[in-house]
Structure formats: structure tokens, C-alpha cells
Image (cartoon, rainbow, N blue to C red; front, top):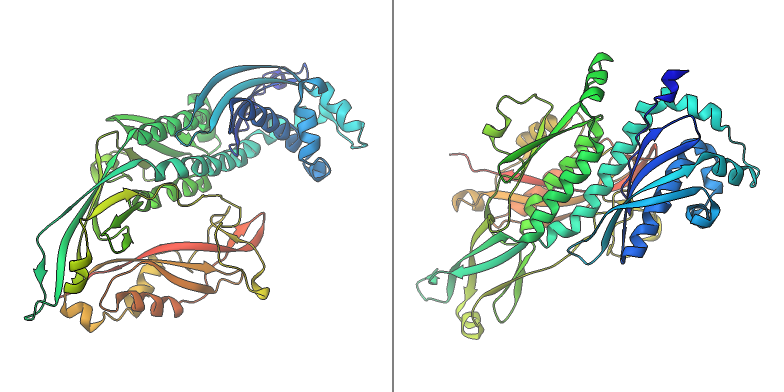
Length: 467
């Protein structure tokens, strides 16, 4: 029995919250550390208490949790219910977007929880659940880790979009024809990190430190012949290593890495007669770490190399093609941030979608528990592109190269629909990217809550001219 008295259950979630079930003893109390996000400090505190309570409900009575809606959870999360015996605020801070984050430790009474649930005619066996949790501990912790990392990426997504300041410079116009009717003007936009990038780095490290397996837990995992998944954060040249339990957690973190370039491209260029967004080929800071960073690391380690305030995140260069009549109407070039343009809500429908057709009434997700996958994986997809891409003659002749960014929906049957260009290239390369994707076999669909769902997916297709 003593081994049950030493049971440690950790459950973490970040939604408007990050929850950690810590010291658990046989006295029917649980100490839960939660992080809540809200528009005010009071809202954030209540979100943390709500999360702590919901985690207990999900753990003890998962088959009946649909009976307990948000209103019931809020009632349970109030101090008057007695379920939360007390709480202590550990940290409070305001985010760059104006919202608040509160970390608190709440003491939950399982006796009061049991009484509340039984009053609703729902069966609950606290004693049995306590002992069962000793066996279920790893599985519960693993699933909670995945959920927490999804929400962590959601929280960072908005702040990453406002983490850069921009400057633009232009060169002298160059004539493109003998009549001097068409011109090109060299442009260069530099994205420099502002203080928000430091907030993201510190907050990311703080959250990962809560989620990470400690030294003894790492050894236990190894003794069970289970794989661990290290995440190495390099910030201000100081490395920190955190140990995750699931490959799916790494997939979630990689989604943050894959968005890095788009974060640095959150700018609009103004000419006085029109505007353009995120143009040019880029020289981009290596957010995913350099080859040297990966030296002496295990093959399962992923690395995130955070820049800091004042560092250049990216430099984008291109030629703005104009007619003489346009140039006569233009003023000087300027550049400004676009601000927060999207919400990365994993498992929640995309915002600002065009109206759905009658036969397209199902939700489209931005990310899911299991992402869509080309049959055979990334290597097979690369081989498919090499086999089917026909380099357009115009692009080849004019040495046009680079990445075309394409977005499409992977349907529940794996077919690709609504293929569109987010960032294209001239010379027929954008059209070729769409043509090739239309040849694609059905993908393995995205999975959410155990069922196939429609998923919005964005990929780069690299066009590199061969001699």
C-alpha cells in the first residue's frame, strides 16, 4: 500500500490553461498547478480554477463528462462548492497582446467532488480511481502532454506574429525594354526581432519545464524500454533540454517551427498606389537550428534556436516590376507590420473561411491529433514531386527559382480540394504547383477524436532549375 501513497500524477493542459497534477496522497486531496489566460487577471484566475476542476472530472469520470457542461464545471470551480479547498497564486503576468496569464496551485478535495457528482446521480469510485491512477499514470500524462503542447502553440502563435519590426530600402530603377516603358525596382525588407520574441522564448521554456520528464522519470521510461523525445531550446546561446513522452508532442512543436518563415513575413509594402504582402526570396534566421547544433545529439532530438531582441530574423529581396505610368503616380516605398492576422486554434474551425457550400458544411481544422500524410510519408511525397514536375520553359529560360507556398484541404477520404497559392512565383511555376498537386493520390486523412476530419494544409514546393 505504501507505493500507492507515493503516487505522483501529472496532468498538464493549456487552452486558456496549463494544468499539472502534482503530489497525490491517500488523504483524498490533490494539489493541482494551473495556468489560466484571460482578458483580465480575474478572468485568468478563474480560467485556471476551471481548468483544474475539469481535469479532475475528466480523470475520474471520463465516460460521464458530457453530463457536466461548462456551467456545472464553473459551479464546481467556485470556492463556495468546497471542491477547491484553497489556492495560491504562483505567478501573474500580462502578455504582449494585452491578455493576462495566472499560474496558481489549487488544492482539490476528492470527498467534496464525490459528493457533488453523486448529487447528480453519477457513480464515482474515488478509492478505485486512486489506485487505478497509479497504473494509468503514464498514459494519462502522455495524453495531457500532447494536449498541453497544442495549446502552447496556440498561445504563442499570435505573439510570434507581432515579434518583428520592418525596414525597407530600394535601389535604382532598371529599364526592361528599349522604349523604357517597363521598369523593375530592387527592394529589400529586413525583419528585426523586437522584445516580443524574448517573451515567446521565455514563456516557451517555462511551459516546457512544467511538461518535461525529470531525471528519475527519464530513467523510468528507459527501464520500461520506452522512447523519450528531447527538445533542445537555444536562447541567448544557452541550451536547455526538455524531455517529452510522445512522438505526437514533437509533431505539435514542429508546427511552430514550420510557421517561422510566415511569422517573419507579416509585413505589407506600400507604394502610394497599391500594397503587397510578404514578397521576395528570403535569407532567414535558422529557427530550427543549424547542422552544428545537431552535432552529438540523438536522432530524436529537435532543436529550436530562438533569436533575441535586435537580431535580424529575415531579409527578403525582390524586384518590383512597374510601368512608367505607375512610377509617375507612386510615392516612396514604406513598410509596416500587418499585426495579428490569424488564430492558430488546433481542433477548432478556421476563422475567416469563405462561406461553405451546402455539401461542404463540415468543419475545416487547422491542426489535429494526427496530421494528414502523403502515402509513404515525406520521402515518398518528394519522389512524387520529382517524378511529376515539369519545369516551365519560361521559368527555366529566365532562371526563376524558389518556393511556391500552396494551401489545400485534405478531405476525409484523403482527396485534395480547394488548392490555392499563398505565395507564388512567375514563369508558370505557381500553375505547375497546382497542376502537380491535382495529380496526387489520396492522402492519409487527418484524425481528430478518433475520426477522419477535413484539414487545411500548407506546404512549400521548391522549384530549383537544373542545368
